[in-house]
Image (cartoon, rainbow, N blue to C red):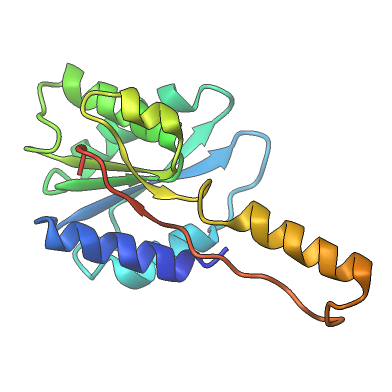
Length: 173
């Protein structure tokens, strides 16, 4: 998964839509020790100097919507200049969206919110959730094609596939 190009494309598209200060809601399962994800490293590379430190690592279990709401509030408290929040799951972004509404913030007027998955469920939120679309980026097709080539002997021994998630623009950003 080429998150570097995907996140760069997402952040550039957000800048074109007026975003200036980004914040990141990163994920960490409560059962694991935290280490920076490829997505976080891509964010840090492309977010710009004013946004690199605006990161909240959300400890989560299966209640990632709750983690998104808690993380959103922490991010906005610690970095109130944030005008765009990128959450590294759509469910966390939905929690952030819910917290923004409850706190009286207009989305996308006061703050833009973007997830990372591309869940069709995001089309049902108010406003519909923009996302870095991992689900529909062609990964399953690319892996299936590679498996078929391995099985029929036409794949190279060290061959691998790379796909790039692209922004799915909806009304939240």
